[in-house]
Image: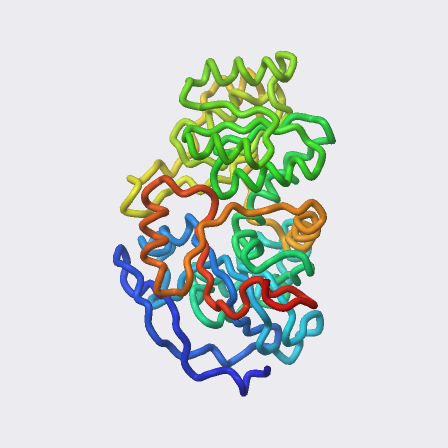
Length: 377
């Protein structure tokens, strides 16, 4: 295709004013590629919790900014130093652009390189994102899609998948050990269940919504517990299936005020609780949640629960995730909307609290269902 074939203008969904609806309009197509940049023709983009925070000005994003940091599509053009990708490749977009490559995180273990603080930013957060016909990304954080993984599956994995995948990896459990997931029936949680099962773990799903409990079962949790019963009852049910010990590790992906405390309570003594939820809901609806993690003193001290925070996974971890997705036929529960003009309907569904899984937008219907070696399906 090449940059010369890319149109001068494209449709984009942008934050143009904080705490105001998105503006969907024509904007210039990004055509100036750095050495490691790639221009991707967006196939599917996904809505993330963080998008509401950007709209609310939490990150002090310079406006206007095109929304969404969860995207997938086909490479339209590559920068002069890109060697691992070519035009026509199907990719999952990476979030970060232009990490420095020389700081302690970049030079340290590869699975901490995503913590580099010396970068240009993240697409959809402080750089233009995937709610557009085209998105400019960094080839060094992107991942090729396995032939069997669709664009619809890949887009939500770019952030939600990568985030909970790292949480499951950081739990560092062996096959047959118990992993509890608090918030198991949400966009991240139902993926975490499938990832954990693919790694041979036994999974306890804990959620407080009827829709979430149903999705936890569908995703394959071995045990599903209703958090609305209260901590004492939830802990009792966890102990019942773990010989009185508690889960070997717990991942918390819920932004409920009491979720971190619940996650610690169901974890065995000296166990690990992975906190990866975004604890600030900066959207008009539902009401804002606390921006602090609240954990009872007794959990940290008397029970020696080790609390680890975790960000999105590294590029190498993301590529391994996609291989696992392909091998184990992991699926994403999606609510699909066709075209960028449908985004207001997606926002309405997300704010209603009834959405199961992830909300996605099919930006380019022509790419939908296209996989390597196939026509449209």
